[in-house]
Length: 179
Length: 179
Image (cartoon, rainbow over all chains, first blue to last red; front, side, top):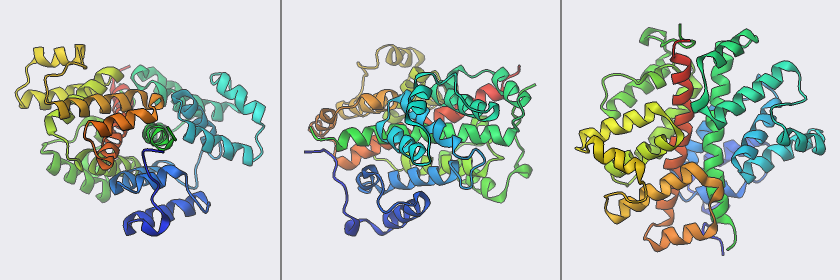
């Protein structure tokens, strides 16, 4: 038996129900990942999680679907299965080749992407994986490559969101797994 | 010259200014930390961080000293200088001396705390640093130690908040350093 329970739709607290509805519309799905229904037992967690998502992964998104390559690689690096599966499934759904995605996970520093997109993914992945290793020169280099400061802020935001999401999702996934 | 600058209050949107005011009032600080102010031009980042801080760091039943110790240890493991210094500043105010704090960092499994507080720190650190390694049995163990399911989700949220916050703080410190 799993440790956490999934709250049934008709038992969701009203504030949580509204937030999940916003998330469902945004994701264009009928049913969200099981983790959301487990989180419903603790509304502050749902609130923080969804507010972070809506603020840090905005739509429309200037980085387009490349965003999902970044999230797949961050999830892969952090070993978060739910985030990895969600990102990868989306990329497959929009027509990306499965073998190519596997290759990206194996060699995230040699991505077969146009220069700007490659730099976006590499920098965001780096901020998410090792923010303590960032140097002032890394920001200058991004600027020289043509990125504006507000774009760099957005990349840090993406990395920050996935730090939160991979921690919460990994933990809830373990608590939802059958023993 | 640093890559990021610190926007003055006049440069902030009313929404960001209000969140900074609320943060300052609740945290009891006179100024906004530069690791927050550096993102002042990005309302989405401030909103995501502020709401996560309210919901996951403030909305908790765990003891203040145990929370500060947990932050110090997570920051120590993740090499986040800003959060490490902030946590030690708070612990110093509570009467912990440097030697005691250094000993906690050197031996986080032997903290001189009440059992419940020690376990809170232990699990918060574990979730923040290796969420992907959690197993279903870890939750059963937490429950056996007396933590309710809601409290376990509180610990997950707390750990996730600090994981995210450290991404922002470390990125800000690097971008605010001189080349």
